[in-house]
Length: 404
Image 1: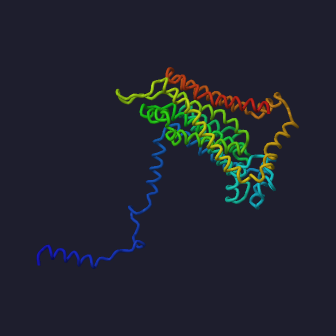
Image 2: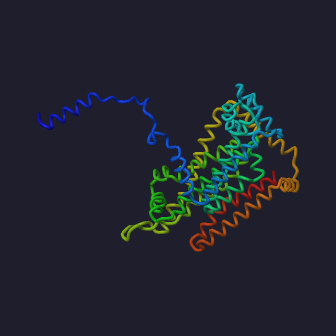
Image 3: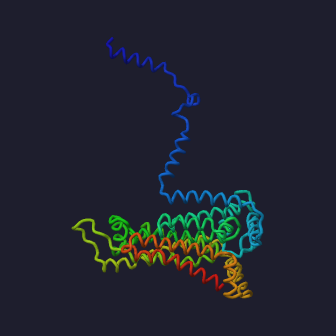
């Protein structure tokens, strides 16, 4: 027998007598144990490697979450909160909204809180938890909007002002519509600002070519319809519609959303990649991209309509009752109690809302100074595009509060 034959026979004999140990009897070793420490370490390293403003925002979110959780079990002192709580109890029992269940707010308010209430114990704590979750989403959206408008530290400052604002913190732990409606309004503005950022503030020539140039070409409907900017605009419309369907006050957020989306027509012409590449002239480019702003605003309108239809269609049989409870109820109350501008101004100052407004104006001024000092020549026209919409939104909200 040759050596090769004897070696193969020995190998076959060894394999025939080999017994595999069942997996259930294998003793866990260092290589098979869950790498919990490694995962935790990797997560910590990822947090450490983020930018300083992002780390600050993570800390703010943790503190804001703790403050809200600690206040969810406080006794209720709000009459409206008790009404909404009883409405949720009736909905769980099978009663229909706007028919046997009265609601002075649009339908998505109670519908958005209902899953938390129904699945987490059907208690006031569970309903308040839903409000707190939406308020934290608003804080995150505020950071995104602030970062897009005024940079990382501007977003962190805006996030801090909103997270610890006394009025917003109180509404974040109370079963009322103010906190979730504001959260959705901020989401809508942040998404619209994101769309403008991608379109108007491309940082590299390649990005400019892949966004503005492609969309500006004549007849390229499919390019803008399925572009990231169109998706962001549509999502902005969805958030805005859901906010209005929580509280009608959110209709004022249409002003900054429209300004950001219509500002897409102020985009810069793309930069040629090579000496032989031919791109549209500034005049031709301006004429082509002039329709980009209205087109993306149209995508926003489409998203808003789809979201509104999805929420309102189940109530088509009780639309008259819904209109009477949501609209007519408030208009009648306003006509019976018209206090005037002096009374409303005193009410605003008494609630210390002006302190938050002063802090917001200070933050806006600091962001304006920071962006202007960074590049006075190149960023001067862009500052108006970024700063004007939130400033006009704040002004419109203040005037509306005085006149209501």
